[in-house]
Amino acid sequence: MARATHLAWLVAASLLAGCAGPSLRPPVPASPVVADSAPAAAELSGIDVVFLSTMAGHSERTLQIVRLARDRLRDDALKTLAAAIEVTEADELSTMRGWLPTTGPGVSAAAGHDHAGHGDDAALDRLRAASDADVDRVLREVLADHQRAAADLARAQVGVGRDERVRDLARRIEQSRSAEVELLSGYDDQVSGVPGAPRSS
Image 1 (spheres, rainbow, N blue to C red):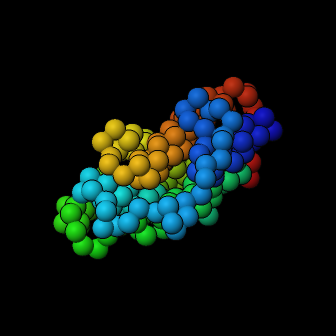
Image 2 (cartoon, rainbow, N blue to C red):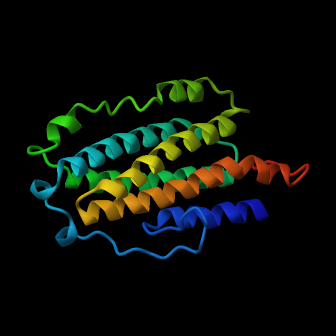
């Protein structure tokens, strides 16, 4: 019960755009992005466009990973976390696609980025091959690695990005992905701390 409560708390945090960072402080809701505050595509620098394009591809792959495993997961808390990640990243993906220009500086470089790559083809193969007994563990490992890469990318953008609204999105992505990585990576420790604890079915 304590494990499920802890996971549920973090899930709620990850659903908020201004969720807690790695220290897992109580989340402070961020102001939602409204149409008037969205950066004009023509005004974005090349580095902002490349970040949005790369992160959009990364989120597309996150959705593939989660949707591939969600119907096979056994642990209820992990199901809840996966659902929260799916909702959050689908929303962020919609925002990033809306901000991306179709012409102008940075678009050629962004277009050259392979959205289908991200080094996760092997991860998808692992999920497909995982037995029902192992799929929870494999998803935790795959997602932890994948979200760690997203946090690193977002952290770098905060330091070099030009548009403050894109940098703010990067900050929120870095915080949410870091919190997810901490949760996913510490999951085995939480389970091992409760000897003989039954699994949710």
